[in-house]
Image (cartoon, one colour):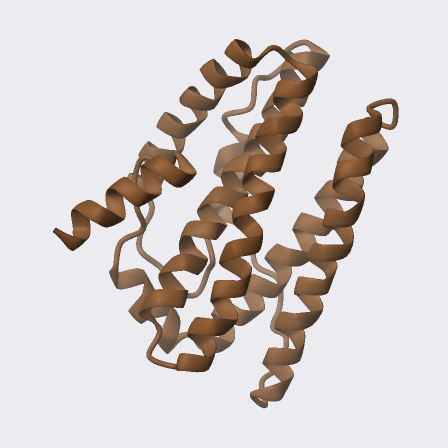
Length: 205
């Protein structure tokens, strides 16, 4: 029953087709220094990606206005995670290659129209935020440390809002049926990607 509820929650709220393997939380707890470091860099990359989207689309006023505060929020999250790292007597480790994100980038349409490229950029961000939200939900419910459960619940709630924002922006600038059709393709691709990836506890993705 519990597994069914988790699957329905992931699909209905986030659209993700495959939930994270439950073993991931236990592995993450064992690799706390690594997971915090990776989390910090995820927040940093989210901020810089939003800056890049603003730079590439300055004529899109609603996008600029919507993503500007996200830059501040994501950088604030980076600082929060960094503070947690130092509070625990740890150090910020080296940034690692993000295999998950790189494989998502492989699915982008190559040589498409500017509209198609923009759509894929927005949906990649939506997918990353959705998977991050799902992972933070896992941590907020599965960690033995009560403080860390509360710590990650805050991130879970934030990422859920970001995921919907990128889809809303895509639908604002592109017709909804086109966005939804491509989003379904992205979800199917991500499901197969998750199936093929080994369960690792030292990464958020």
